Image (tube, rainbow, N blue to C red; front, side):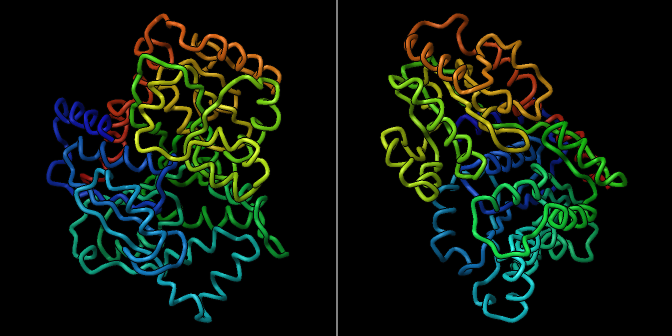
Length: 423
């Protein structure tokens, strides 16, 4: 986060602070160690760079003890003490509601059939707004994911507060993908049913912001009467360091990352047995819980979550993006671009970006396991070799600076939010 703070200072020093005296509430899921968390961090840094006072409102995605009690809240708080907000609030559905007929019928019953869209909406409806938060004077609400909007509706109440919704992918797609790894009862919730819930709540936002062009186009077709805008996310700039000997994969625990990593471990790595690959992030827990044998076979590769992932990127010889599953823009791919390190990737890793990765000189684009393994063997043989040009001047770092940097993101967010704040 130190690099993110430096970026904020740099942007703020050159800005005219157009949101000075304004308060922006960023409403988001109580997630950490994942791409969505980094998006939330970027939002808060950008609004502060524009002069706003920023409050963070974290919503837990499961019933539990009221914060800060409970294991999930303790884990969240421990992993997010660097969140760049001026004030933080923590909200969620009280688990004492679980045995009530209303919750069982309206939330748990749909969930056991795989309807995560309804379940998350019902949780948000039941999350109380703390009195101190209700008393806040708020000039703009920046909500993340449609399922926070029921809570936003309560927070807004009768007040004339504009709402920006940042979609971060079509969530119904994620639910269908996630349901493949779960145990649910028929009749199963369909993509169409879950999408309809998502779209109905999206209609309540004043502006829908999307992270990539494909997502913007999809939602513009699905909701033609809504206002849509493309704003590429900013990701905290990892160091474009000198490089080292590590060949790394960075991944958070979600089902798409699990599927991609399983493909790499089962199909690619056996074809490059000498390569010493290090896997960072909490994906280790996801692999262990879903396929213990696979985890045990490759236990030495898993390094878990680290406090300074930037140092890992800076000391890497190569970054691997073995992406075969997932929707929306890959935040980890943007981090890899920022590092300036050599990258081996599948085309799917660059989904949602209006770029041709074949034009990037430090990217090896591969189509299948054999090609990925060949590139990996070559990278392993060149560990520690001096690179030219330096990583700070590499094609991928230049792309990051032009499209995904904090300064680029802050400008785009200002253009999107200014009309709503002024109104």
